[in-house]
Image (cartoon, rainbow, N blue to C red):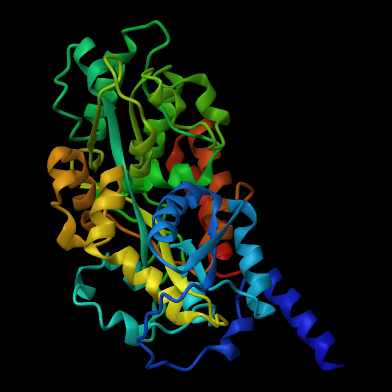
Length: 429
């Protein structure tokens, strides 16, 4: 077989298996280069559609204040991994690549990113960078990326509806039992108002909203190595039973069963829902008024406790980039105090540096302080095959959730029946 044909086949194979093995042989040697250059170079960058507006906000500011210019390509979430796989196999990755933190361990271990250890080690605030993201972007002690965005799951609640229902607007539920009680009270307001909501047909939405409840209750969903599901436990069953019960009792909008994600926060944002567990980035786009006054809190467990799902994105330099120094110029600028505070915090984003949590904008909006604390309180699960197992609408997690929440019978035995399928998917079967 000729070299060109062999390269083409290799590229297609990499795309097909989503970097399961192809990049291992091309892992780049460690670099000692720590330069950052702003010389008018055009830098390419990719991100997924969910992060498009966030990335554009940063890039617009960078392009307006630097000689370098970043050309951003935003890709659909559902095809992003395949595009990265194909580009990695063909050695056509962009200069900058932002990826979901859940997939970063795979990319870091397969040579998709340039080794940035020497550059990252020059940062005086290195130890203050989000721990979960740095862990995800580190392989065998080497740093292949840095935190780009932090999104934490929080319990959003509408203080206006709390007060209208005779509840304390400054006291969110401290347990799921209390959440159920509060949801009933809010539902009694009638006129199309519901106490709680979720996206029953959105796999990622359901893990973001239910997993913190399971963690806060003292149980788990996945082993530490990311190779086996542990969702077959009574606590997970009780959490999903509660979801099913609230739906059956009409405390949740009927549309929740078929909500696949695109509009899953709309009812809350319109002031028609009392409580919802969702990502903190939603706060940027919610318009508050007399009928919607947003409070945020940790996600509670069945009888107490608190937790969060820590998500977001990692940013790295593409392994075949010829503009690493220019790419690092953007990264170091993005991580600087001025950018983190006066660009990100100003627009209600959680900073990726712990030392900047109590910035001037956080002091003006205490919710940002709460959300930043959740980044240290919550968990970020890791699994090489996370995407196909938990984010695929046709994956085993979605089948398990739909069956447990909307099927017949209690959730615990239902989860036991599905657990092996989830574990097999995590193993790559």
